[in-house]
Image (tube, rainbow, N blue to C red; front, side, top):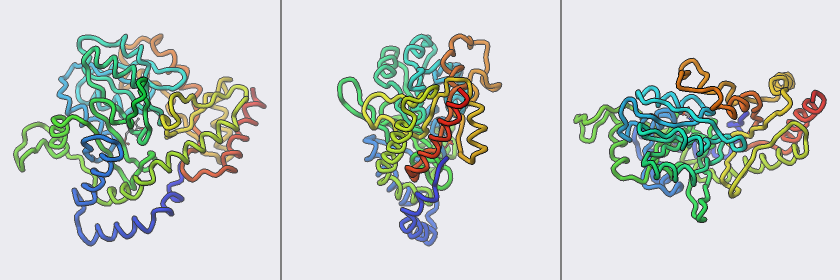
Length: 374
Ligand SMILES: *Cc1c(COP(=O)(O)O)cnc(C)c1O
């Protein structure tokens, strides 16, 4: 699904040299590399504050802790996403309110969000799923109308640019009240272990969060709030500093691979290619995800596995049907789109090192199977 080895070859010398420097300096935690990366990411995203942390799940959790929500407050998020998003809401004692997604972009449906708002709603968590920015025009409008916070789950969308209806643009993660991302190795900006970061333009929130990632300390050994221990280490910052200047080029390679897949699948029966809206860089293709409309998705997965072609089903079960999150608050008919997507989605190999022949071979294998079994 991903080729991290090939990507490493391009940045190997830089990373190896800097790794040695860090090993010699012994500044493993909060060293100069972490601070430099933080500043570079702030400038790339056009956001005032980046707070590095240990992983993307922590980033989401700490972002929500920083908002000062209380147990029982409602947080709205998408039914169709990775479990981390809803996990932290539940873990903090907030009430997860799951809503359906749009059938074309797979992103949270702003109309469903608005319908789910109650006096207890305190935050909306849009996920820029598979690398495409959610409809932030509509989400920000709903949020400001009802005075609730927006926490962007940007784990899959880093580097994407959103163009608002007035023509202005912003990087994903820098749009809402606070944003969170993951540097897990397979993400668009991945390190060689775990890593994550929180973004905000709000000075007070940034200050609160900076203490929270460090045991709630704002002054050494003075613990003002209950915090956590969540930090990015220097070796991971070295990797991220080597990759950040290449992020746009990496995302363009993903986009070019997506174009090649799109072309190969054009006019194919039963196969729907990813819908893109807005400007070309509003989708950074963390995943390239097809819809298989003839009921043969599972058979296709088996067929690809037999032919040694990696593929993935993200995600096979809606969150509202997961044992951990099921609730009698959820009504099955509210999740029509997610219930369908979990049966139709399939993600194909997508990374920066894909070659044209590989894409052609993968696409041909998919098309031959679907057309002969349609
Ligand atoms: C990867 C991911 C996370 C969690 O990131 P980790 O670094 O693995 O904790 C959260 N949300 C989404 C949508 C993700 O894809």
